[in-house]
Length: 262
Ligand SMILES: C[S@@+](CC[C@H](N)C(=O)[O-])C[C@H]1O[C@@H](n2cnc3c(N)ncnc32)[C@H](O)[C@@H]1O
Image (cartoon, rainbow, N blue to C red; front, side, top):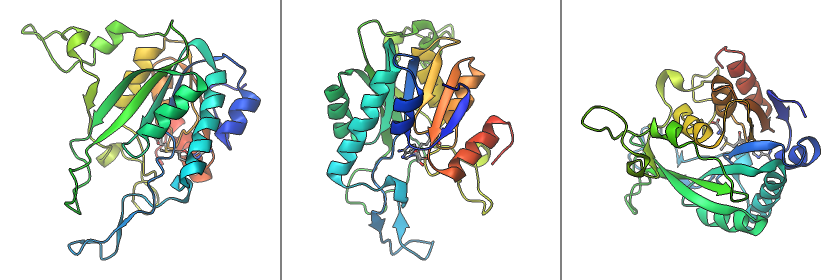
């Protein structure tokens, strides 16, 4: 197993082949959400064309296929995690049901569902539903001895006492407000557009890593994308492994790790 390394290829194959059982303390997974290709036509669209929330081939599955894929990578994740290990999975309302059922089928226990509120979420183009402004992160554990670093998490509490100190964790709800990554923090391709459609805020990953790992622990991201998890893990003194099967995203993550922009 190579650490502080981005493996190219399919995460299920690589986890089974290269990651020894029970060798990882924390897995953060941001798998395909399976919501690509849902076209919205908007008469008011200023872009002159149909609007897609996402339209990526790697994000398109049939229903049974998505469940089988989810079970496969979760099985590999379960084997890779040590008995005190945690699995955090990002998802939206589209897939949270499948994610929880598949995780339970592999033997995981659900500890929390964190809600990420995006104050700058996409506008409501159809006006046929409530505006979708949240994503979830499901926290699963393998056994009973999971890590939860109370003091580290307390530092994230936006609620302050009258003296300006963070309030108790009981006041820090399973809810975090963070803007979608924009501006200079957003990696861009040569055409100036966002390089990866799902670049996660570093603060969200930092919360997860601080909560459920210690310095020196090994953090694995099987769907590394633009490299957010590896950047944050390295900054926080954790060892890390990323897996990414798309060459363009992998190259961007490697440049990001080397400290140069995409
Ligand atoms: C939701 S994105 C992750 C974004 C990442 N969290 C970030 O901040 O940039 C999912 C990523 O998984 C990759 N992917 C999809 N299927 C994969 C597989 N079977 N093995 C490895 N990577 C995969 C996609 O190319 C995509 O970059």
